[in-house]
Amino acid sequence: MPVKSNGYKRSPEEWAQVCLSVDSGYVPGGKRQAAGLYENGCKYVRERIRPLGLWKAGDVVLDIGCANGRVAMGLLEEGVFYHGLEIVAGCVKFCESAFAPWRNFHFHYLDAANPRYNPGGQIQPERAVFPLPDASIDVAIASSLFTHLETPEVAARYLGETWRVLKPGGRLFATWLRSPPNEVAQSAARTVYREADILNLLGGRWTILDTSRGLTDAPHDQWTLALSKSDPRVSMHYILAKDVQNVVVSAQRSGTTWLQALLGAYLCTAYGLPDGNLMKALDLTRSAGLPVTAFTHDPQRDLPACPPVETEYAGKRIALLVRDPLDTLLSQFMLARHRRRTVSAETSARDYILEKLPALLAFYEAWLGADKSAFGGFEVYTYEAFHQDASGELERLAQFFGYASNREARWAAVEFADFEHMQAMEKSGRFHEHYAVNDFLPVEDARAMRTRRGRMGRGRRALAEADIERAEKSIAASPLVGALYAREAAGG
Image 1 (cartoon, one colour):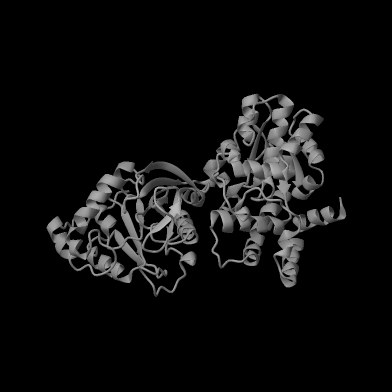
Image 2: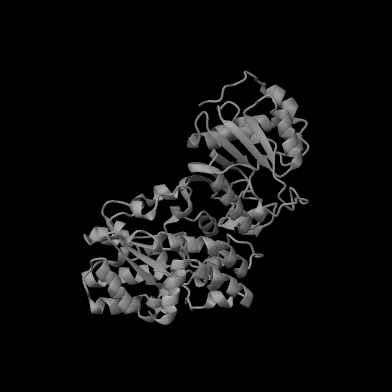
């Protein structure tokens, strides 16, 4: 419902007088140009943001890094509920006074540290929490925010908090300084990220709706992205499509990429298919008229009120791929720390593993404890078993999914998915051709590669004895996971 105006109006000339009291934060053109802040903000919203059609009257808008209310001034006539978030206390004080007549405009102070704008801040920016409830915002605006956050870890935190407070399908307007054309820089005065790093920060949680600008290294030529929050429930429609008969379910970093390569290479060889979709099982099997197979990390499982797996995946053949929880979490940590850079340098592998273990065990328990009669079939595969006998496990999976048995195709697939070959393809960029995920862009740091050797037991070696004991007690307390790995240890 559109906001009911209280009838208050302020002319551009009156705004110019109000803005003369600005004494904190950034003002385009410098403090002497503060009188023009209102006209500057109206022009910016009118020419840069409004044409994207991100909001409608009555929407709730969050302006992250609102400074002295430049964007807020441009939104006064848009009929929205507005929240401004700022780390400079003087800016918040000015905005609370300047916008006091508008009851639908609210401002919040976030005491996050920043060496340029809030050097005395008491909150580490990597741990900042926006003072707003989950799923309460329709549109977020981050204009010239990511250009001052210094590190990818801080940017990841702010993106994560933005995702949290946005409603499903909510929109984000964000500007960045990217390399190229700029040189990478990590200062609060001017933060420039590699374009690949920006895309990796967005990951699968955001859908890019529009891009513009940012083609030169001019100081204020920022890459502008209009984004939509990807709702896992919505993104699951392709997995839950009626023609999908087979689904491989796994947690992230459980050997899924390896299995995709194994199965894709097997099908291409067994059925004489072109390898253009080798790493995309859904497209490969659907286009070839084979029983349609999809891979998923079941991302909606941790959402509130998520339907049971038996309801969502009813009638489908489920292959649950499980990996030792500690090895899985160490692999997740390496990806997050060295490639996506979504955890800070201060976060240790130990802290990450112990923090994430309960959620991973709950994920496995939800699937292992499901009513198997609801599915078209249900089998459990382990990463460790594939390491022991890749050909045999691949044969078992192919038969379960309704594909022809072909010994030569199995051996060709095992050779194709060999570690050295997989890593060579990643280094050359070939995976990026096969696989539409930015995580496959080539990198120089071996720790940041998606293709890793995956030695068993490394997760335990990242922990002290007391931590191993604590983690193993948690695993044993998860009856189905504990029983599964007890059988694996016994060779059953």
